[in-house]
Amino acid sequence: MASRLAQVAAEATARPGLFGGKARAFYLEVCRCVPFIHKAMRLEELVSVREIRAVIKERFLEFKDVTDPRVIDMLIFKGREELEVYLTLHKQRHHAISEYLDPILSKKMAFPKPPSSNSAFLDQFLSGNYISPTAK
Image (cartoon, rainbow, N blue to C red):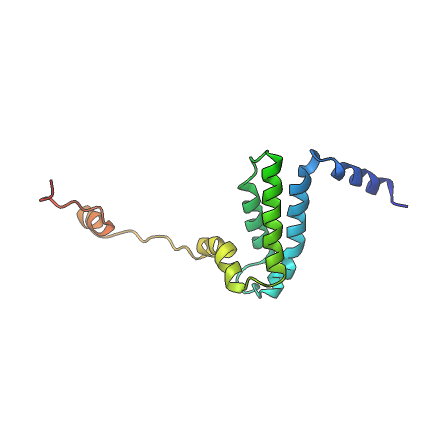
C-alpha cells in the first residue's frame, strides 16, 4: 500500500490544471532522458547536463502563452517525436550541436568587440553604412 503522501501526490498530478498537466509531464520526461542523450552523443566536452536542461527549459518557455489544448497536444506530439529521434540516435551529434547547443556555445565563445582607434568616418565606412557623396 502506498503512503498517504504518495496518494496525495498522485491525485494532485492527475488534475489537469494543476502543475501544468501534460506539458509539465512531458518536460519532466525530457529532463529524465537528457543524461542518456548527453552520454550517447558524447557531449561532455562541450556542455554539461545542466546547460542542456537550461536550453530545453528555454524551448518550453517559448510556448508558455499557448492555451489552446489542441495546440498544446500538437506541440507535445512534435516534441515527443523529436525526443524519440534523439533517443534512437537517428539524429547524430552534429544535429544536437547545431540545433540546441549553438546558442550556448556562441554565448560562451563571444568575445567583446575591441574599441576602435579609427576615426568616426572610417568606422562608418567599414561598417557598410557609407553613403557616397556623389549619390543623390
